[in-house]
Each structure stands twice: as structure tokens, then as C-alpha cells.
Image (tube, rainbow, N blue to C red; front, side):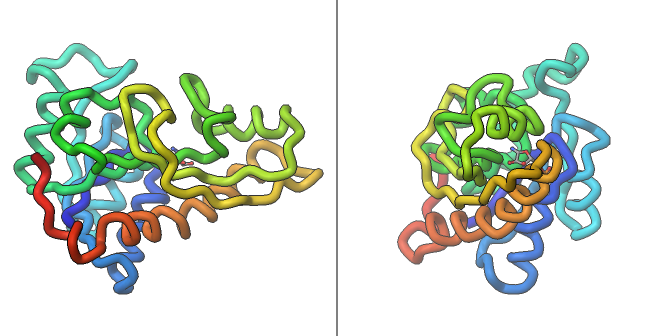
Length: 204
Ligand code: GRF
């Protein structure tokens, strides 16, 4: 299937998907990258690989749009590029119900901690790792889930355990979890969407 990645940040997960596709591990091309931040590293990474990379101002920090509804714009871009599966990789904006309706069971998110315990509103980036350390648990690790209308709540597709070391800071834990994310996301995409029956289904 043709994959779009929505990313607000540096885009190391996007890079892991591009790399997996380029080395032949992921038979799904990344055909579009959208970011709500004009300067997101994710856009730069996409451009370096010749992937259309588009900024759409949406979310808390977006200035008032002159170009109409940003959610409608995103949907239009996904249709234009004949996208079949949408991956949220560090996308810090609540997903619009219109997008979920257009891609039923075809929008996935990667979260840098165990769900549901370490998810929800405000649980992103370092906040997740700080909460994990504060809880004193022995293991953390990324979770990939189907997206619904609430933060971090859709059905879980996969989770990888990553040990929490006694000397960890939120930063060291974040680095270790991020490495696990890079190995997980393409595997989930491949398993769930690259089977023969599913590979060619069109979004509604
Ligand atoms: C990752 O930790 C991801 O789980 C979270 O945001 C971070 C994005 O990192 N949702 P990157 O932009 O892919 O490097």
C-alpha cells in the first residue's frame, strides 16, 4: 500500500520507514510526508529522498489559516497522492474524524511508552519517559496502535519491551526506546498492511 507519514518533529521514525523500504524490508512506499511545522526535520528527510513533503499549518501553534480548513487540506493531499495507509510518527495534533472515516483501520500511531498506562493528553516526548521513571517500573517500550478520536486510545497492534536501567534519565530512556521504535514501526506496517489480500485495498 501507498503510505503517508504525518510528523511534527525530527522524523527519525520516518527515516526508519524510508530505510526499510529502500533496503527491501518494507514493500510499501512512502509517497507523502505532511508536517504541521514548516521546519520539521521530517520534511527535510523526505525531500532528501525525493518524497513530496508538505507543510500544513494545523494544531495549537498554527496561525489562522488563509487557505481554509487544514484538516480538509490534509485529506485532499492524501487523496491526491492516492494514499492507502496513514502513519502518525511523532504527530502532535489530534486526528480529525474526517480522516479516520476516510481511512478506517488504516491510521496507526507510534507512542514511546506502554499503553494505556503512559498515554493520553499531555503524554508525549520526554513527559512519557519522566512518567515511566516516576512510576518506578522496570520496563518501558514503544507501542503501535490504531488511531481513534482520542489521544493514544485505539486498539494496540504491537508493543516491544525496553528495560529501564537504574541510572536512566528521561533522556537516556528516550534514546533507548527510540531505537526500539525504529525496528518496530516498519514490522507492524509490513505485517498488518502488506499481506496479499490487504495490500491493494483502496480507502473508502
Ligand atoms: C517518537 O518517540 C514517537 O514515538 C513519538 O514522537 C517521537 C517522534 O520522533 N510519537 P521522530 O520525529 O520520529 O524522531
